Image (tube, rainbow, N blue to C red; front, side):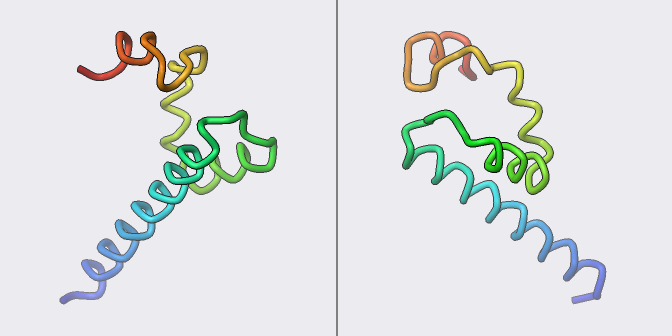
Length: 71
């Protein structure tokens, strides 16, 4: 495998791992409010998480999350 392709695969797995850790943390804490340090770490490690800012006022695991979430 070429070096750029290997790097792309490695970065893909790294991004998936970071997303998996963030999801596991949020599920484990039942979506409790993140500490300022955790918010900063999330933004630095997973910039696409800023896209979820649209759903800030929707509490997870509620009917509102089901109505406004993906179908």
